[in-house]
Amino acid sequence: MDFLLPFVLGFIVAAPGILLPGLLNITAAKINLQKGRQRAIIFALGASATIFVQSYIAVSFAKFLNKRPDVIYLLQEVGLGIFIVLSIFFFFIAKKPKPKTDEEVEKLRNKSRFGEFFLGMLLSALNVLPIPFYVFASIALFRQGYFQFDDTSFIFFFVIGAVISSFLVFNLYISFFKRFEHKAEFFLRNINYFLGGITGLVAVITLIKMMRS
Image (cartoon, rainbow, N blue to C red; front, top):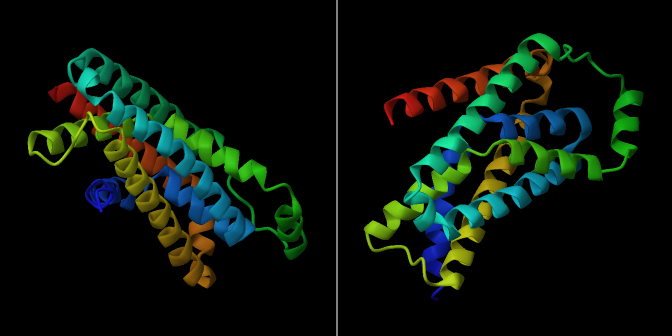
C-alpha cells in the first residue's frame, strides 16, 4: 500500500488546478460537441500525456527549481507570453465557428483521430504554468513531511495520481457539456471568446503573481 499516499496526494493536488475552466478542458468540451465523445477522449489522452511529462519533470527537479527562482520566473514569463498571444488570437484572429451540417460532422468524425491526440499534447505543452505549480505543491508537501523526493516510486505514483485526476476532470467537462448539448449553440457560437477570456484571465493572474514575487 506504499503507492496509496503519493497517488492520493497527486490526485488531490491536481484537481483544483484543472477543475476551473481552462483552455484544455473547454477545448475538450468543444471537440466533444463538434466531433463526438471519442475524439474528445483522444484529445484528453494527448493532454494527459503531456501533463505526465510536465508534472514528472516538475516534481523530480523541484528541489533544484526551488533554489533557482530565476528559472521559475522564466517559466512564468514564457507562460504569460503564450497566454497573451493566445488571447489575441482567440479575440481578434480566429474565425467565428459556423454551425456544421450533419454531413460535415460525419466527415470530421471519419478523419484520422491522431490529430486530436497531438492537439491535446500541443495545447498542454504550451501551458508551462503547471510546472511551477507542481514545484511549489511538492515543496509544500515535503515541508509538511508528506513528500519524499528521494523515492522514485513515490514520485511516480504521485504523478500517476495527478494525471488520472486531470483526465477525470476532462471527462467531467466532456460529459457535462454533452448533457446540455441542446443548449450548447450559444457556447459553440462564442467559443473563441470563452477561450480568449480564459487565457486572458490566466495571463492577468500570472502577471499579478510575477509583480508580487
